[in-house]
Length: 204
Image: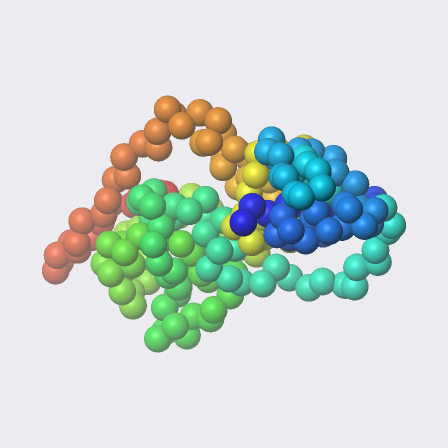
């Protein structure tokens, strides 16, 4: 079922809900639709435009929220769904400093990786392979991550999320869907390391 972006009465993004939940909010006058999804829903008594963005009619006080939870979806969103080592489609999670060597499961030590790079790197440090990343991993920030971290995205949400940070990932998603002919360049895959040699530095 499609999802709908929910905004506070102050336009602050609160999260996403299923279409059914959003319709109930609108029909009960607890929210108003700001953007249509482009489809019409029919019932026994009438028809209504399916919303894509709704805004609550009353301000809801949100309790303090800590750092963005480290989930697989949020991690792949931060790293654009691409392996940070070679740029191929990410399929797994890698710890930059291996857990077997004291690395922790934290935003600044976890990245998205393809299966091949993850297998090649194994429990070694990047310096052991001569690999490097364009930028160090870090925890995402901004209220927009309440939405981006879910991995659910709709191009219609962009104007309502842009003022709240973390939109580099969302912008890439929108541009890819609006211009699918702009294909992602073929990744340069690191080859296995042989004994006595090192890879040339590799950037994502």
